[in-house]
Structures are given as C-alpha cells and as structure tokens.
Length: 307
Image (cartoon, rainbow, N blue to C red; front, top):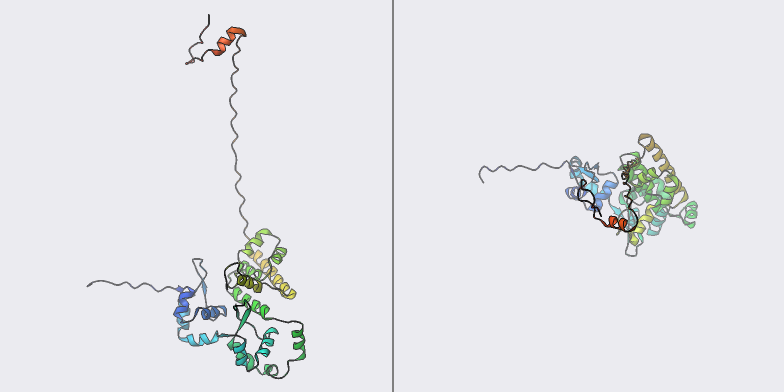
C-alpha cells in the first residue's frame, strides 16, 4: 500500500546452536564437534538457557566453512588406518596404547563402542618423522608388553579430552569442581566431600554424559560407564583435581547453605475463666424440683419459686 513503512527486525546479537549450525551450513554433529574443540567461540546465554554463538563469530567463520568442516572430520578405524597407510590392526593397537586419542564415540547396533578420531590429527601423526618407526616394522617390545597386559587407553584418553572441553565452558571454581566430579563414581565424591552442603552444590554442576539413548536405557548406562574413571591412578588424578578445585572455590565463595527456617511462635492458648461454682440445691424433692426448673431468660429475673 502507498505510504506503508516496513520496519526491519533487528538481527540477534547471538544465536542458538541449531540456528548457528544452519548459518554456517554445518551438520549438527560437525557444529557440536567444532564447539567441543574450541573452533567456534560460544558465550553464556544471559537468560540462563545454556550457551550461544555470537553473531560476530558467525560472520568471522562464514567464509571458512569448508576449512572448518575439514578440521572436524572424524573417522573410524578403517578410514583412519587408510589415512595413515597402515593396517587396521596396527591402528587399533595405536589407539589402545594411547598414541592416538578418540574425539567422540557412538554405539553400534550391537551396543559396542565405536571410537572416532580426528582425521587432521591422524595425518599429523603419520607425517611426524618421530613416528616413522611405529608405522612400519614390528611394534617395539615395551609397547607389545603393555598390550599383552590388556592396556586400552581409548576410554581414558577420551575422558581426559572431554573433561578439557567441559572445563573450557565453565565460569567459576564450583562449576569446575562439578565437571571434575562428573568423572568420578558417586561413592568417591561422597568420600572426598564430607560437607553435605558442598557436596550438594558440586552435584548441582555435574555434567550430563553424551546423550545416545533414553535415560536408563542400556546405551545411556554405557555412556555413564564411559564417563566414569576406572583406573586407580586416573581416579586419584580426578580426586586430587576435585579437592584442589573445591579448596579454591571455598576461598572465593563458600557453598551456599539453606537459611534456617523461621521459628514459629505458637501463641499460648488462653485459659478459660474460672467457672462459677454451681449452686447447691437442697436434697430431696425440693432440690430435685429446683434442679429441674428452667434457667431465667434475663439476669434480672429471679428463679421461680416453689411454695
């Protein structure tokens, strides 16, 4: 219509993750991994709804989408072995020995864990001259000894990496303590944090395991298992780190304690006024008649008299 004025809606200062992924033309898995690795900067949501991506970050990365996508490409054992030009069996041995670190995982249809690795890191490992002797020939004896004793560092290395990611998202020592506690068995937390208020406050910041199934499902239980440290030295590391974070948190701000409930004062029930003594009536027929007589309707009216 002539004279109609269109008012442009202001652009948001930051975006939810789903919107940011669309703006950058990334699949959600690629986007989440880029955030995980610190390739995409995020900020806390002022409304308390998690984290968001600043518009300035979207504009910075908009022309680098292909490079960003390539930097977060994750591959499994077969493709990873092909990138490094080694047999899949040797690649698996590298992973169990902790020479390459998983970046994420998912359960297959048999509920077995499938580990994924950054293609970029695998290329760097293969290109490093110091690793040339590991890529060909026999595996060194000391490494084969570790494999014979059942060494498998994949879950542990993933936990360390995931813990680092979560710590980068925190904003204070109590939150950091909650992240570290999230990798310990609940019994370890109870044993270390004897103050019930501190223990409850730390538990409020426990991270949620990566979601791969409905709560309580076998896959969800698998995720909880992978989040929990199991080697004694790893448990000690997380315990020591938790104690350090809590000690630092205490100096900055003690854990909140619930206010004592107000003392309710129950008013004393007023005692009834002393009841007047009941009049004594004579015994016999006269007394019986007086007791049966109706009470006067007015205080000035005297009782009926019996002649």
